[in-house]
Length: 245
Image 1 (cartoon, helix red, strand yellow):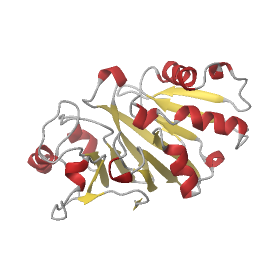
Image 2: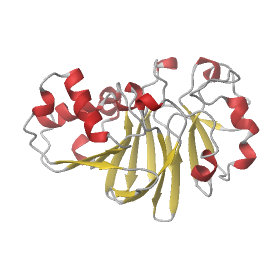
Image 3: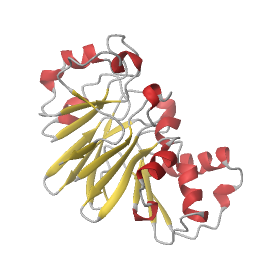
């Protein structure tokens, strides 16, 4: 499994980073894990061939993780001229949220006669799924239920496990999410400011021993995490970073 970080930024593009967008390759299959509002720019800049993507999987429905979906679909319809099926997967309510986003961004577009089949798949803690050849398990996170359910995922392929928290404050559910994973990509918005819906580094460090994974990579960083933190033992992600499993 190969994960390319096309976007690692927060909602505000802090540090000039694109919104969250992960390109996941598993054998011949490819998917996007989140597709934030700036993701079409990131995809084009990286030269990603969109018709080769079989699945878009979302952690939650905030714009910096979900907002690129309408443009992706209209690009598929009118630019890439996609013909083969696309799976749109995510928490409960994914189809309703997708149609609502289309109407909000491009009124009338939800009724388009799509030239390609679209399948909506709900992935929940009670209902795992197999997407693009990858076994996907969902874990509830603590972020903003108005944009949720908010979920983290374990992606398993060929004996390797990639875990991604999505956006979350500290929750004990991060412990099973990380357990035995080859890599945990975890949000860490602030350094030492405790927030109700985001994780800070001091809290993460206090719980580090509970996270049974050898490799932790920090993402979704705000200004306090991007400024002068070179002494941290954990890796910090950047746009374009490749994680090989």
